[in-house]
Image (cartoon, rainbow over all chains, first blue to last red; front, side, top):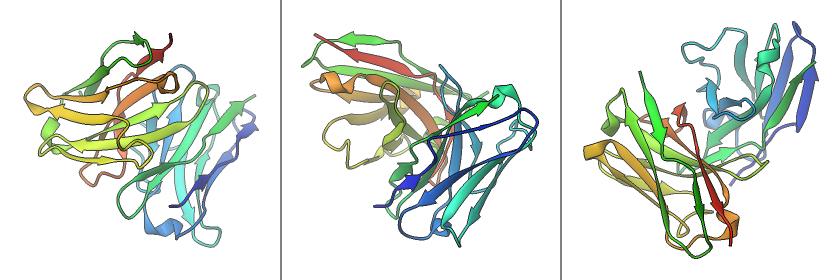
Length: 111
Length: 119
């Protein structure tokens, strides 16, 4: 099976743009859709991106997702950072048996 | 409004059995998968498995196969996660999530059930 590797933490100032990466260890990142989940402290996860770059209704367009086959990675970009964006972010994909794989999570600090 | 409401926190002793629940409402319960995700204290998300309540098709993560049982009762729109013999290492928050028909992504999440196993 493959792994998804995320940076442990990132930080940026309010109003700026931050990008969180998610690198797939084997197999093509484009083979299976990537999702991104946000988990604020003490709360359940919520879905912010599905199918690589689709936003659920209610998620601001400040959140965007993309994949890059050259680096075999997916990215979550958050523009116009707000303090409320401070959270842990997890990428997720799946294998040929539809078994899910989560990245280790990235702690976003907005300071 | 789609809602997943999970059962309350549990405190158990090692060796005891446990069944926690996740009740769906606001959508056709038999048309979506329900997934279970573990989060150990201070750690990340781990996929445990999913069930399709329409026909009880169930898939487990290899890491959890044989360790837990996932089931569903479509007559009451409720999915379950159960253990026959708990270990201290089962101490964690457990989340259920609604998963789309393709079984690849969650869209709605429950509030979580905290399971504490301690002697």
